[in-house]
Image (cartoon, rainbow, N blue to C red; front, side, top):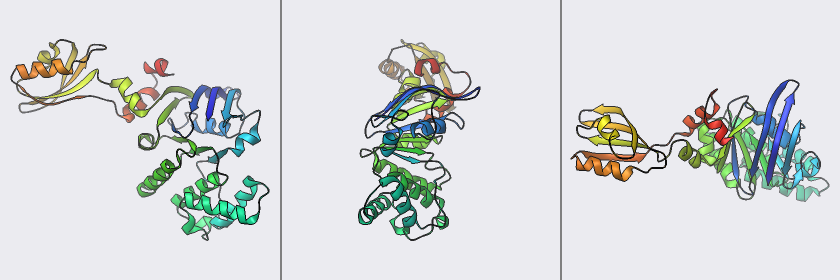
Length: 318
């Protein structure tokens, strides 16, 4: 549904987006993740036809956004970080105005139905007669989403849709976005990590204008620190040297100790599953095996590892 190839955007000598490529399948929610200033908003503005790229191509719903900008825009709904509302208009008046712009020649009754549908989808129908300027931040975001939905686009591009919302509003907005998947293909930009794991099926991590990883959140945690590292908790006189002496174990480090309870981080040799060997060795020595599980990096750790100055993973994932 979306295909970006070698997209580059320069402002004079400054390169905001540098050779970015990714795809989004129909009905998918893709998280576009990166620190502030990474190039997320610039990429979204290029995808929506708001600004041209310096190099590369972007295809939305089968239409090149540079060669066929009007057709691409007809299939795209865009929610910028700050929704473009007119504070003196009521919600219904504003969405009717947007409908006249986006829906073209259409009878007032049919356009009214589209407005009602968009308000219902975005859960703002209870605020239809409230002035936009008197809405809470959460409702303003929802009205912005309603304007993006009013022409029932194939693609939704949402830039920081939960920025500035309180915890309850964030949960409501996440639920709303998840409910739209399947019928709409969604790109969701954010630097809020729980957003990605709780809302998105796949993630593109971008840093300093470059893509450093494309995968599912689960696969990223497996790739960067999967079954090769184990957390082991033992009740008994176990030492790091004793654990490191088990076949297939490369390194063992004691991480904490409370009385006879000792926890270890165990690193296995490459492509070696040592869980059975570790468990057997501990039990054979008469120690109590209280816990043994793969250690995975949290999304926060992955994000920091991929977006710091020096990291070995960039070449692997980029």
